[in-house]
Length: 222
Image (cartoon, rainbow, N blue to C red; front, side, top):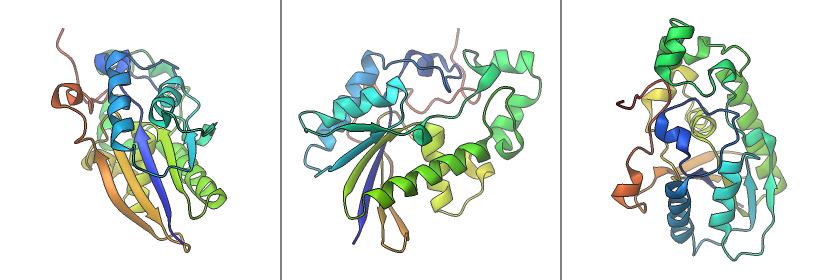
């Protein structure tokens, strides 16, 4: 009995546009982000979604609500699906972090396993949390089609865990765009098959622009 899990990254927020560290700051979607979620809704209109889980953060909940559409399903929030907390970095862009915490951005971009952001989470903590939440949700809903809305770093850490990769390899895989679909099938023995990774081909090109920018790895021009 397979369990299908459709994991969607939230749509765009204003801080995604500005490449600021967002983390635990609870911003809503911007207009483009709502459009992106609407494209995901259309892409999933024929899916027999039976249960919906979301990160408790506004951007993920709003994405889940848009995708839910006219389905009469409750959206369950699970703190295990929330994004990494970036502590003292939140609200800063990569240049500002480098000015205040020299050398830390290099760790973020190349050796994230070694990084501990002041006041924030480690990548290992987030990886363990999202893996635990994933299997807890799957165990409660075996045989169903589950929609989960979460965040770029959470979902990337989860997918590389399924592939047996190290956290330090997370920036070497395909980045997950805003509102992109990531689909896995889970067998009864918890064997995982990834069938989609950052599938955002349903989003018009003009609304995909900038959707994989990452604070600390990409910069906007002043």
